[in-house]
Image (cartoon, rainbow, N blue to C red; front, side, top):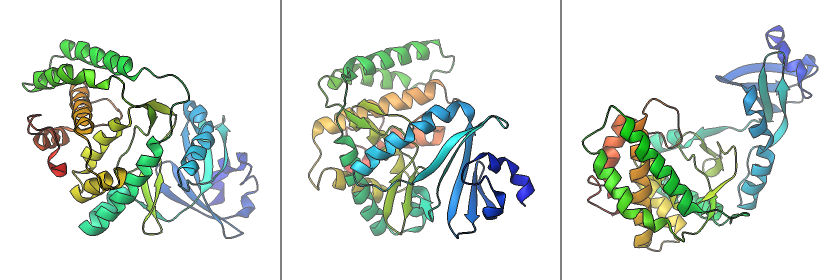
Amino acid sequence: MIKNYDFLKHTQLFSDLKDIVSVDKIAENKLKITSRLGKDYVFASYDIKDHEAIESEQFIQGRLKDIGLAPLHIYEEGIMPDINKAYKVFEYRQEISLGEFLEVNSDSDCHKLGIAFGEVLKNFHRVKATEAVDWERKFLTKSNYLFYIHGLSEDIGENDYILIDYIEANIHLTKNTPINLMHGKINEKNIRIYENNKLDLRGIKDIAYGDGVFDFVDINRLALYSEEFARGVLEGYFDENKPSRKFFRLLSLYQAYTILYNKVDSNSKKDHSLDEKEIKQILEMYDNFNELLPEWAR
C-alpha cells in the first residue's frame, strides 16, 4: 500500500510513511489518510496553477469563521513539482453534500436546513466591501459583452430575445444596490452538512464583492431539488419578513442574465452552470418572465 503513495513523503505531515496506517481513495483527487495516532486527514491534489488560490484559503476561512461557521482546518498546503501538482492537507469530517441531504430528508427537515442556510447567507452578505466597487458598470459591461457574443452565435433560440429585452428593461435596477461579499458558487455539492444539521461552505477560492442578490440565482436552481429548502432560505435570510419587490426584480434580472449566459456557450465550464433541462424548468418557474416571482416563492 505505502509504496503506491510515495509522493506523500514530500509533505511535512507524512514525510515518514511509517506514520500512516491506511490510505483510502474517497474522491478523484482526494485520499483519506489515517495516522498511527488515530487521526484522520484528507490529502487533496489540484492542478499546480491552483496553488495561489489554495494559499488564499486561510484568509477566506477567517471570513467564514467571522460569520459563525467552522470551516475545515487546513494543516498544510504546498506544491509537488515532481508530479506537477498543488496540494493541501485538511481535517477529515464525516459529512454529506446538500444534494444528498435534500434527496433523503423530509420537506420539514429541508425547510429547517434552508432557514439555517439563509441565516448563514445573510451573515455572509453583511460583510461589506473593503474597496470601491462599481457594480452597475460591471454588470452593464458583462451584459453588453454577453449580447455581443450572443449576436455571433449560430444557435439563437426563439426565446432568447425575451431574455435580452428583459435584461435591457431592468438593468437600471443595479444602480445604487448595496455592495457586499458574494459567494458566487452555491450549489448542491459545495454546501456540506455534518453532525446532522451543521453547515459548511466550500468552493470559495477568492473574495468577490457585488450585489448579494445575485447569489439567489443559485437558490432558484436548488429549488429544483427542494422548494421547501429554497423557501426556508428566504425565511432565514429575511427573518421571516416578506422580501421587497426590488429584491425579486433584481433576482429575475440576474436569472435572465444567467440563462442567456448558459445558452451562449452550453459546453463551457462556468459558474451558475445550467443544463438544457434546468433552463427549461427555470423558464417555466418564471412563466417565460411573465411573472416577477419564481413559482416556489409565490
